[in-house]
Image (cartoon, rainbow, N blue to C red):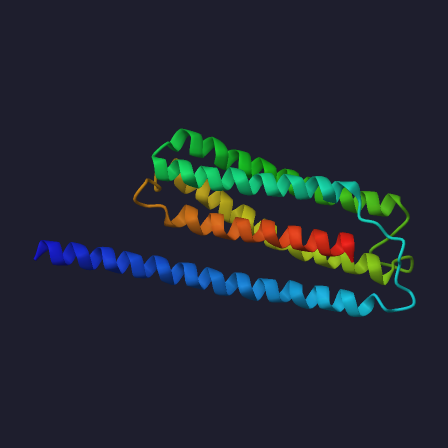
Length: 196
């Protein structure tokens, strides 16, 4: 009888984990569709006569792309170390991921400053459709990244409260999935804006 209850509890936990992962997948797909719409509008608008063909992305966006890709690795390895039971190393890597996430945001704002210093503005009479699109796409991504930073803070809090261990990793797995999604999304947006 106890074995049946234990099996049913494990089965319930597996179903719960699958449900939460599926919900996260649906949320990420809907977020991606938002950006697909924005990039489609960008493509359509690029045929306008007032579109800037000489505009180049700032170097800070290249640096931020490298930073966010590295943060994906630190989050991945943090999850791996939790699964191995090495919570100290996992904690260090989670804090490194947080620092890299903040550095990404800092680089993005430096990129905005570089754009303005180059004589391009996002709003007002001196703005262009091109710079407004770049601004909208990056700011909408930053809003999602702020959500990712909140998720990361919750994961870090739970980690230091010792809620994760080799047999309980759902929270850190969900956090890592969302963080990797944000990273992949930025790489897509950066490559799109850089090459299109």
